[in-house]
Amino acid sequence: MTQKSAGKALVFDLDGTLIDSVPDLHAAIASMLGELGGRVLAQEEVRGLVGDGTRILVRRCLAAAGLSEDLVTEALPRFLVHYERAPVERTRPYPGVLEGLEGFAAQGYRLGVCTNKPQRSTEIILKGLGLDRFFGSVIGGDRLAVRKPDPAHLQAVIDELGIAAADSVMIGDHVNDLAAARGTGSAAILARYGYGTEFPDELRPDREVDHFAELPEAVTALLSLRPCLAACQS
Image 1: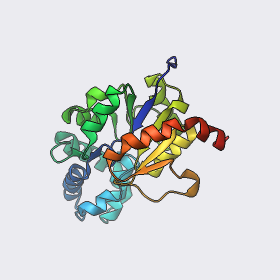
Image 2: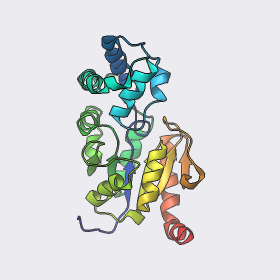
Image 3: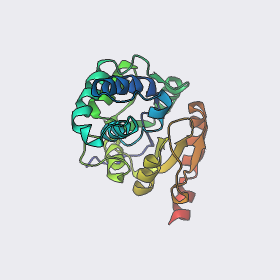
């Protein structure tokens, strides 16, 4: 295991947190469903199905389009072919992401990505958008035997960054992000602007932001309170 060092780590979800990827996901899903004879879904329908990894997204889209979920084995590679051909044609970072990451890096934070999106797609997108240079660890949903909400997924990113979980913050838009943070002892910030769903009270985030530009202030306030939070939760 990587030796832990002094410092702070910020770990980001990808879709719905750093980037709005639904337009390209929707285009690839539409092509896949067209080949299989299913109903083409509206973009907002696809938006509501994102968050648990590509295989589950494809399976949910098959069901929503009136096709059997058993087609997922055939449908998944079709989707990936379409998606990886042009994953950043319409996908963009949310407003303030580039400036925010530059600021965090300049302040010495160690940055990572923990996403249920496949590793290959994740790396293509980060590179295509010029965001890959910020991250010391990027672990997609198929790089390990587990993925979010399993806390071992997040812990692996934290370990690669060489920071203790108590000095890390998970930032994401989905209940899976909150669950992974709670399982590792990381703080959690909910990106309310993303694609996320409702969450139970026991997974309530430590902070919520409506825009990425609000993150620096939320991170600073949250990390300054970490000793108090840890004592209150013990």
